Length: 288
Image 1 (tube, rainbow, N blue to C red):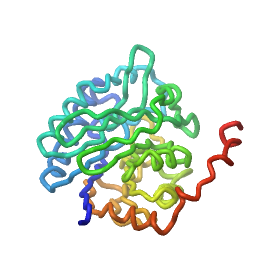
Image 2 (image 1 turned 180 degrees about the horizontal axis):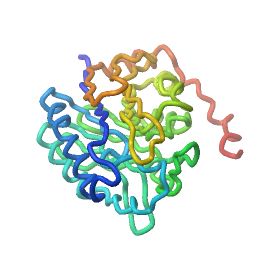
Image 3 (image 1 turned 180 degrees about the vertical axis):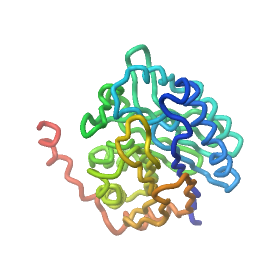
Image 4 (image 1 turned 90 degrees about the vertical axis):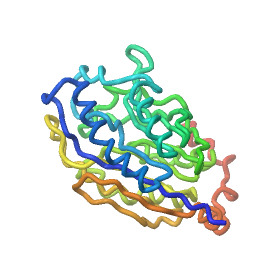
């Protein structure tokens, strides 16, 4: 019997930004903007929904203003608990990326995973932290320390990779070896330097590891940083590298697609990449 899953990705622009309210007001405006899209996903029967990177705030990393530390919160915490209510209401797994505060001065770029019954399953912390080309992320985030967990949800085994992580095949492989059937990559990436990689790297991960991916990007420009245009084009890609659903470049959107997880078995039975790996020959990779 086919293992069909209906999944959704939400890409949104900011309703408020720096200078248009307090940090709490800016966060509340962004959460409120998401709610109709979350409700729409639930009403459409979406089973797994992923939000964009640090979904509740501007992507403040082009600056180096410590006041944004105040936007971080515990995980689970107020925002995750709020999303648990929607997950339970609609029987919908949710991936909720937020700015996490473990304790004073220890902050992470994190995604919480909530099961379809509203239960908090755990979290992924972004492992690879850039500090280049206007993304001064080491000012805001510590590197993740939870490895590459895979979460057994009601509908699929789900892994998370966040934005800059996508440039590193090692973690993508670890997620596959850990059993991921779908890997979600919530991102915040602007037109320019890395745009040509957006539809290249993640299909390559999907092919190399034989899983589906849901890849999310913001839309619009975010003042006062004006780093560039977040170009959307969120998409789903299958284990053969086919982009089978793609969102627009410049508008707020809920992208919904249905796919059959049985394709994973079919593809891996043809391309035996996991069988033919030679881990005993890769030692130098971690020694360099």
